[in-house]
Image (tube, rainbow, N blue to C red; front, side, top):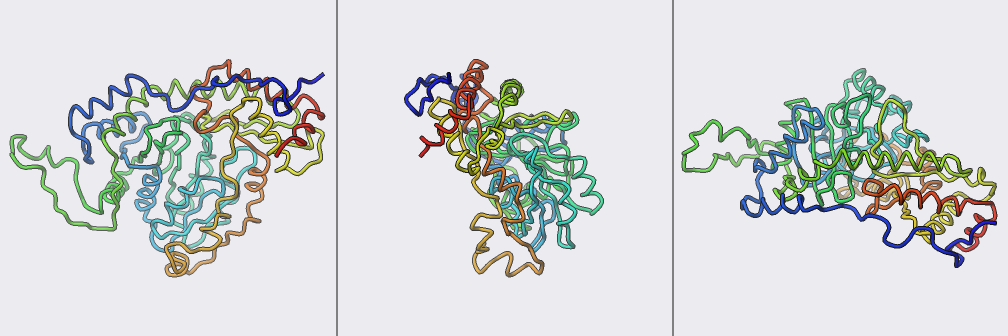
Length: 442
């Protein structure tokens, strides 16, 4: 006989307070930030913690250059600019991602063009990319969604064939690997977020990396008001010279103030020392969940090809009502399962609720006002009809996250994963328990 569900008055499976809250801040993290305050240097593009973080990150990822920014969105924007994207140019990206992936294109007056996703990886469907290329296409912006790398060999081959720049959006994929190479080092440029929910958290912030010195130079100008502020001026001067480094105060291009702060950089450096350990813990937990949930009818766990690693920034499962023996709408089944698991104490969440091109920004095309950039710079045709993205729509209707932004997989003990599996087995114990959950759901 099945146990009584917690949502119907039964005993909760996962005790309250069992999950570890993220980010985990240690004494070493606090010490690193206090050292910045004690030093008294809190800002500056070439301040010591900022420069050290950039050196650490380029070494970790395996690129020649790295720049720190005040957000992952800023990192993407400076990459779009460095790619040479201008008014009316098109950038191809995925319909399943956070808004920032497309917003960075719009911020430089480019036009995002979306591809649907692969239903197994949830990443961009590479078979659709060439169909979207036009004479206006300047770049491809693949997103390593949820920490799983895209099919980068295929993407790079398409880009090289058509003379396009590849910008990796690795905001959720710090330390993930594709055929032995870390994300961010495969395309022409890579961009990361340091927002508090990420595997490498520092509150807010971002990182840009590249092997291309010219792209690094352009990106650096964009992040600093469009000025050409060199980081090697001091080395050319007498160290005893009494004046500060000379600054021309002359903008050569449109620029923004996208610099990081010293405290953010110091915290990120400290967290970086634990990134690999946290990623390993996330992989262990993700693989444990997938191994057990794959045995349950009605659940399809995430799939990771053998040639790459996922860092499980988010752990998404697909729910199949028919496989569970039920004939109910996907959204109704999803919402009922989600509520039942939440009552059992499992951290569950939704992340995104519609394909990105379905958001009002793209449906209404107000942009900067008066329809810009579509109306004033663009002579092409792009469709944001959500019917063109059926796999993304289906994914969002049929899936939930196990874990939440405040309680992701990376810091959790294996014992919690065991309780999560027990709770999920309880809800999926029989057709009757699922029907009871659907009947009780609000």
